[in-house]
Picture 1 (tube, rainbow, N blue to C red):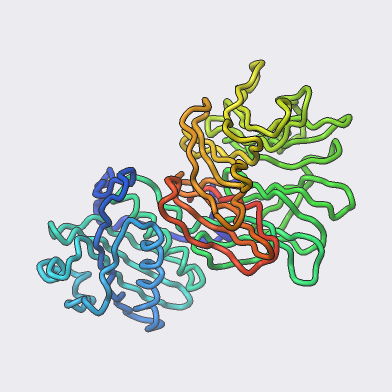
Picture 2 (cartoon, helix red, strand yellow; picture 1 turned 30 degrees about the horizontal axis):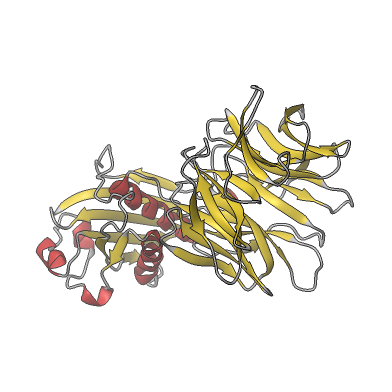
Length: 436
């Protein structure tokens, strides 16, 4: 599998055009509760040639991205007192006292040109307080790749100020019931809630999407032939192959970090155990089994351990096992029902669904079972099926109440929440794609 998640094989060229900091500036401490937001101004982009709407369109995409992080306060364009021109890209300095006067601590300017169906965009980020250039990049692509280009620069801004890669341009796969259908199809939507598209269209049940580490493939279970089979589907080309056909019921749980193995819960002889299957070659290894039903495996980021659900203790609970070593540790507690484990990218937390007070909530816990925390709950519905963002700062999950379902994104500390998808019937089983 190629090491790229670029949608639809899109080609983008990004070049540093000025020396940029080798290390992030780290102006924002993302771990500080209630930390200060960075006041930032995103100026209208100078359009040298091409569609004049790029002037406002590019800042709009970039501003929407930065607002989603909850790390920045956008200075409204009506407050800007300097008009950026082409001269600012050929030596004329910005009026930093003016930008500071309106409260901006950072300023973004851009220059765009469109020639012969090709787009060239130069973007710069300045420290308005010091009057210094922090970041400058030039991108080339097609007009259809405009959003991807701007998402990339938004990720660069986040990294410059925090030291953590942004997640703009990532996507969430999920399942939902289409209108006038009894089945469920796979869908993909951008992490900003845009670019929703249907992935499968076979009027059957297509369940449990899981991303490969390179973001090029989705593993999922489909009943389209009458029996459950786990397929791998290329999200760009639609090409598919069977990867788990043996056993009865079966559901993918996650890939090994190198993408070589797919973990799955598979029933054989009336019992469900944890297996891993080589994506190329198809060899099979049993990872965990014995008395009780074992399902929903989630490999750790280092590939050494796997979290899974087992009812061996009398009720579904989360366990962690070191691969190849006998024994496992139960890590869920204070609940009679725990399912859907999802390991954080840093490996320090495991999110899962827990039942408490008659409702399902989202909780996280350290891999050794210590420090359990409630992250998401609702007084009028259930919160289920968490999946971490690539930067570990957020979780996407399913929210359901009578006659209504939605996908929501919440920060991993539970402080910030927004609705990603609503209005679709029986939406659920979200899985966040890898980072770029």
